[in-house]
Length: 295
Ligand code: SF4
Ligand code: SF4
Image 1 (cartoon, protein in one colour):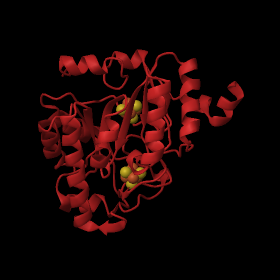
Image 2 (cartoon, rainbow, N blue to C red; image 1 turned 120 degrees about the vertical axis):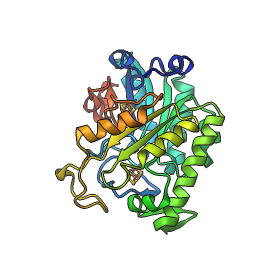
Image 3 (cartoon, rainbow, N blue to C red; image 1 turned 30 degrees about the vertical axis):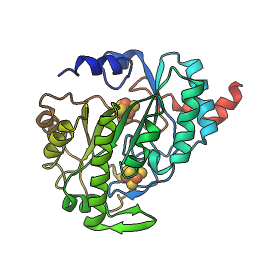
C-alpha cells in the first residue's frame, strides 16, 4: 500500500514514512516534556511515554535551551537529520510552554528541520492554533479506543480543568478531545498519524473500528503498536499480568486495519531521546555532557 502522491511528496524525507527514506534520513527526538495529564494503565512513569516511544529507558529531560543546543550539535554531525520530534517523556502538549518554546526557536534558528509532535490528545484542541504556526510536518495522536467503557479499562484518570476525573467520564472526555483535535488538524491541512497500542483482551477487537473512523476523518496513517510488557520494566500501573500480543496477532490486526490505508510497519517505538537513522540509536553520543565538550 502506498501513500497518496501528494502526501508522499510531503513526507518523502521523513525516515518513518518511507522504506527508502529511512535508510538515508535521520530523525531525532528531544525529551523536553516531563509532565503528563492522563494516566494510561500501560504506562510506568519511570519510563518514556508510549505516545511515540518505548517505555524502557528514562530519557534525560532537557530545557528548551538545552534542546536547541542538542539539535544544533546533532545537525552539525549528522547532515541527514531532517526531522525533529518531541515525544515525551510525558505528554508534549501537557508541557505547552516547554514544547512551544522549543518549536518557536527551532522554526527560527533551524528552519530546514521539519518538526513533529506526538500527544495523547487531551490538550490538543487548545494547541492546534499554535501548532499551525510552526514548521510542523505532522502530529501523532495516540488513540486506543472510541468507546468510553473500553477507555475506562485503559485510562484510570485524566487531569482536566484542574481536577482529577476518573473512570468512564474521564475516558469520554479524552476520546472527545482526541477526535476533536484530529478533525481540527485535518481541517488545517496538518498531517495526522494515529498510533494505537494493542492490548490483548482489552482493545484488540475494537481497534478495527478505531482504524475505520480515524481513516474516515482524514488521518493519513494508522500505526498499531504492541503493548510492551517486559517483566524487567516492572508492573504496569493497572494492568498487572497483561500479556503482549503475539507477532501473529499483531500482524493480523495490522492486515485487517490496512484496507486502502498505509500501515506503518517499521516504526521502532523509539525512545523520547532517540537520535540517528531508524534502527540505530546514537543518543548516547549526544548527552549534555558530550555536547558541552564539543564546544
Ligand atoms: Fe504515560 Fe500515557 Fe502519559 Fe504517555 S500519555 S506519559 S503512556 S500516562
Ligand atoms: Fe519514527 Fe516511530 Fe521512531 Fe517516531 S517512534 S521516530 S514514528 S520510528
